[in-house]
Length: 143
Image 1 (cartoon, rainbow, N blue to C red):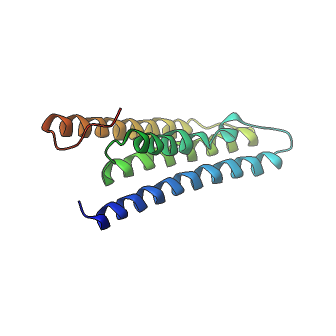
Image 2 (cartoon, rainbow, N blue to C red):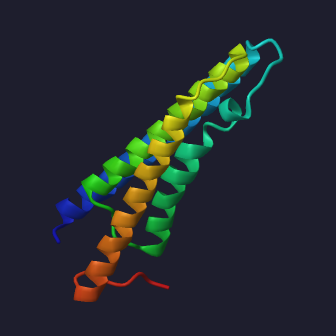
């Protein structure tokens, strides 16, 4: 692997980490500002919307770096981030509706679809790791 390819992958990882951190901060700030103007009514969905990009985006990237695990391919990353975005937006929409004083059965679609996308991405990554370790094409992580 050439140095330029390694440098490009590192910068891609850093960009993705910054994107996930930015999404985390945006969701936290959006929730805080919305709660400040909600006249004392609050929603846990709105308060903790930042947890989805943090736990499902930032932490896995940090773990991949620490464990020196292979970086997921573009399809897996796209599924993962689509799921994270769906769960974050669904949490914010649920919070807005709760604060407004109403509910909608359609918000369950966010939770189902977001969870399915994140689980599909995790499953695809696990299958990729298993296949690559079985064929010996990737080094084992350092323990």
